[in-house]
Amino acid sequence: MKRRHFLAASIAASTLAAAGETVAQVSAAGASTTGAAGSPRREFYQLRRYNLLSGPQLKLTESYFSSALIPASSRMGLGPVGAFRLDIGPETPAYYLLIPGPSVETLAELDLRLSEDAEFLKAADPFWNATSTAPAFQRAEISLLAAFEGWPKLTPPAAAATKAKRIFQLRTYESPSNGEHVRKVEMFHSGEFEIFANAGFHPVFFGDTLIGSRMPNLTYMLSFADLAELDAKWDVFRNDPAWKKLSSNPRYAFDSIVTNITNLILSPLDCSQI
Image (tube, rainbow, N blue to C red; front, top):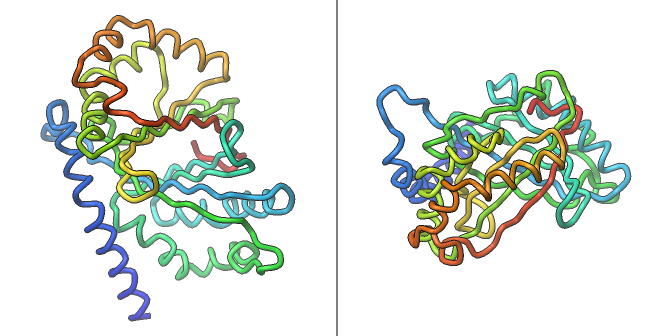
């Protein structure tokens, strides 16, 4: 037990050290519009992608989410947890899991804390102890993100409460350098949030990647009723005079601050709390 807690502390310390520089950069980017006394403390997010094969892996992984991982996360005070199916994007089938938490340490230690939860281990057994001849998934990719200062809390769509039809757009912007990345984060805090609001979007979260692949990058999620609403609202956004003015600012020139955009369309699994 002592060894396990020592390992957990070591992992958390390593993650905090690696994430520290990016946290400082994002804080500086949002400092002009946030940080007033009494403002909400921002969250952190663990974003998981499970690469799967069609067939038994889909049912097994969804059952793991619904009967083991999401209930255990709730017992730890984490949530709401989003669980999604990749509908449009590369390398399907794949499931995504979004877990909000109050600190880097909490999310860095998540699997270690799960391993001490007897109720979780019982429910998770078919997934956690799957054999090499019948694996539960192919690979899992995990990123750790910090909520933007200007959007510090995850905001589920109203449709999540009633399990009404909804889809999600998950967008990742990669930048050529840390400096350009900070400018892209700054751009959101310099009017882009307001343009999203004026266009009628429902943002779920905005996060800066502290630990993950293809860095530096940021990721955000939007919710819509369907693809028709998605297209209509993006048309309003693109034609907003405020957007045209902001995007024409040389400081935020697209070719300078963004080198690649990954655009995914997701739908919620039945167990999703978002």
